[in-house]
Image (cartoon, rainbow, N blue to C red; front, side, top):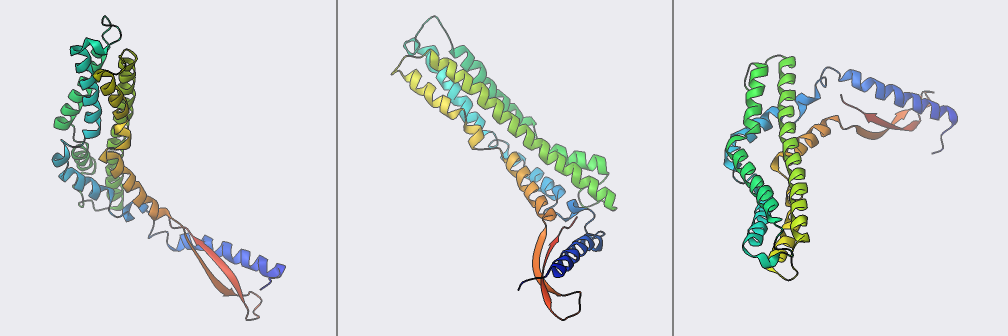
Length: 250
C-alpha cells in the first residue's frame, strides 16, 4: 500500500510519541534494572561462595599443567647436559624459578584465596544484612552492585593470572628452546612446554565464565523490544497504516 506524504508524517509522529511514552509508563516498575536480573548478582555470589571450597584444588589446573611442563623441561636439562647446546649455559635455572613459582603460587592461592566468600562478607558488611535481608530499594541496589563488583573482581584476577602465566612461561620455554640440541628429549619436551604455555587462555578460569554469564543476564534486562502492528489514520478515514514500535525498558 503506497502511503502519501501526509500519511508518512502521521506515521512518523505517532511512532515518536508512542516510543517516548512507553518508558514513562513503566518508569516506576523498571527504575532499577539490576533488581530484575535472574539470578541476582547476590544470589550468584552466595551460590558460588557455598561451593568455592569444593573447587579450590581444581580451579588452577590449566596454570598448573603449564607450570609442570616448564618445570619438567628444566629438570631434564639439569640432569641431561646433552640436551643443551652449550653445557656451560644453564637456562633451566629460569625454568625452575618460573615453573616452580607458578606451582607454589597456585597452591597457596588454592588454600587461602576465596574471592566469593570474601565478597559475600563484604556485601554483608556494607549493607548490614545477609542476602535477602535488605529492605529498602536503596539497600537492595547497593547489595546487588557490591555483589557484582565482587564477581567482576574475581574475573579480573583470573584473567590477569592467565596472561602473566602465558607470557612468563612462553618466554621461559623459548629461552630454554634456543639452547637445546635437536633430536634430544629435552628439546621435544621443551616444544611441548611452549605449546602448553597457552593452556590458561584456552581453558579459562571459572571466575571469568561466571562473570560473563552474569553480564549476559544483565544485558537481557536492557534489551529493546521491537514490534509491528497497524493503527488507524489520523484523518479518520478508517484506513489502517503500518506501524512499527521500539520499546526500551529502563
